[in-house]
Length: 151
Image (tube, rainbow, N blue to C red):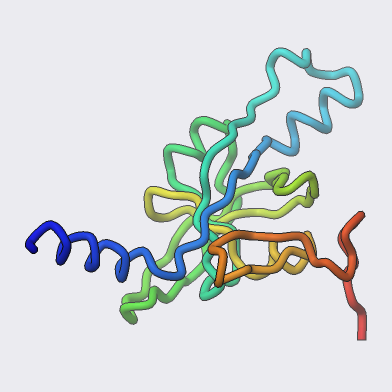
């Protein structure tokens, strides 16, 4: 019975959590390589699992990820967490984000210990959250490429 209760509680804690594979690349490295100014073997990139956080606006990465990708902190941003705490965190230079074969470039907020995919990235890549199946999907209206709406 205890084991069943533990499984039920674990299920409730993870209910609605959508994770996806993401490839993060130092966008400056990639630009230098494309111009012949950096050897391709020096490209800093990583693939990791990310939590899709529809309550977050921006991409969030850890300080460890900043070091791994060789990013500079180019600014500061005041943030407010779900528990109402506020603090100032670093903002990185450009990161190339690839999810489901779609790519975009964004800066990131630096806090926590995992990668969070926020609304800006979802909108730019035209990705939707399928809560029922706990997965990220390409917008079925635009299956071949992302479409950005301008109104």
